[in-house]
Length: 347
Image (tube, rainbow, N blue to C red):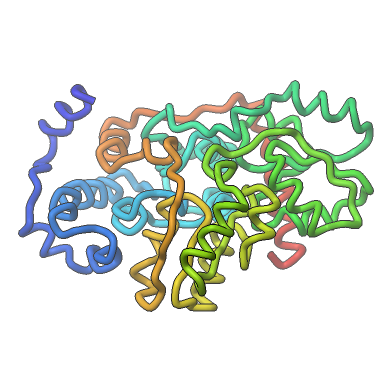
């Protein structure tokens, strides 16, 4: 990081500035409930530099819902869950895509936009779930369940997508599994998402790979029940990567976009989001009447992406994602099947 800061110092004035922050009050208004004025004075020079550099590079920034507020509200052109970002990656008109998320998301953007330059601000922003399975694991599952289609979560490497029949996200998994013409469906790599989908689509025999997310696997049903006892009246909303007993103990379960839609629609007085920490921070200012309470778990991989790293990557054009063309072609088929089927199903 010393070299990164030296390069940026020579090219930009990144001194914290209350005056500059005040001139960017429209941006600050999107996050003022969760970001203090002194912190925004630190972020403002980076936000200004990145937004100006985007225009010069003809670049767009795609940011996942788990990004920190200064990224989510300050520099992102497109925000959303994995499905939304996958679709937008394929249709954005830009020369450069900067992926504010984790590595598999940048790979997916490159797969769908092979002619575009895709930048990953930190190549070490991986994913415990994506790293839990390889293409060999897919073949192992196929051998155990001959003829069963493989539905692979987008939280996987290009190699794993290429070995699969179709991808899914947490927002469309149930509908995709239900629509496939097979009694047995293999789901990889998230065992808890698969088990929750199996409960939603009982007419299918859903079998799964035993991977999980380090954020969501930590929650327990006892946590939920204890919190209800301590904070009666709180609406508890869980991501489907949580264990089934956690989902069962919650009031609602949905993808990150589904969670946002639910809270926006229902406007509970108090809400606990059983997912990654930044979710509540990113929607808090749009929902001032909702009190977001309770514990959360932070994804260490998502938090590797910072304004400083985004600026450096865009300034130097480093961190470019490449995917072997043969792998990309097969992976693209699996992702595109997901997108096409999702559109057909009206998702």
